[in-house]
Image (cartoon, rainbow, N blue to C red; front, side, top):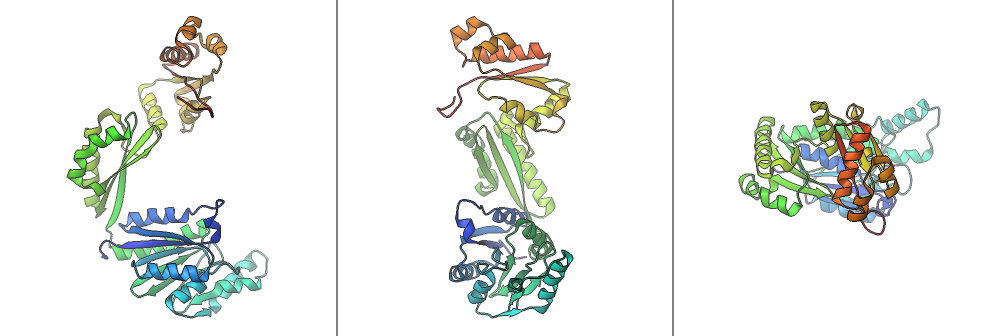
Length: 364
C-alpha cells in the first residue's frame, strides 16, 4: 500500500476562471479519493495556455504521486492539455490510428462524417496509455512520469464520471489495497456552533482532532467523523465516535444519517400516527415546501395556510384581534395562536405557526 497517498487536481479551461462556469469535477473526484484514503493536497484551475498548464502540471508531478487533470482534451485550438502535458514531461505527441478509427466510427453511428479538427483528439503523449471513452469522442490518457501517475480526463462531467468508474477507481483499489476512508455524520439543530464546540471538546482528545469536523450552516450543523482502515476497523471506530458524540451533544442530535430535518420530522409523525398543518406569515409557504419535498409526506402533512395580513390571521385562523394589538404580529403569542388556529381548523394533531420579519430590509 502507498502510505498516506496524496493527490492533486488540475482543471484546465479559461471558462472556469470566469463567473459563468464552476468547477464541479474536482468535488466529484475528491469524494472518490476520500473513499480510498487519498488526501487531496492541491487544486488549481488554469486557463487555456500551454505554458501555464505545463508549469502547473510539472509542479504537481514533482509534489504528489497522483495527479488528476480535467478538461482541455477537445478538438478545438483552445484544447491545449495534450500539448501542455507533452511540454511538462519533455515528450512528443503522436497521432494514434486506433483512436482516429474509434472517433470515425462514433461519428458514423450518428450518420455524420468526422471533421478534420477531431484528429487533434487522436494526439497521444509518447508513452501514455489510451483510456477508451464510450461516452464521448475524446479518449482519456494515463501517464507515468517520475514515479507519479497522471490521469487526463475530459471536462464533460458525464464522461469524466464514467471514465473514473472504469479506470481511476480500479487503479485506486489496486494501489490502496482496500484501505480506504469512510465518513459518517451526526445532524444537529437548536445549538449555536460555539456551544456545540464546547460540548464535543472531549472527543477531540479521545479520537484525534483530525477525525472530527464541524460543518455549520444556517439552522443546522453537521458533525462529520472520519476513519481510515479496513472495513471492520472503520466500522468499529465510526460507531464509537458517533456514540460518544451523541452522548456529549444530547437531544440536539436529530439524526445519525445524512438526512434533512424535514425527513426526520416526517418519520416521527408516521411512527406516531400523527398529522401536521402549517400557518406561515413571514416564510410565505417555505416551511410547507420543505415538508413536502419528502416522498410520502401526504401521509402526515395535511396542508398549510399563508397569512401575511392581520386581517387574514383573524378571519382564516381566528387569531384574536386583542392579541395582535397587544403583542404585535411578530410575537410568541401570535405564533402560538397561528399554530392552534391551523391545527383546529384543519383538524390535525399538530399545528406549526411561523411569524417574523422578512424581506430585503432585514429579517428576524
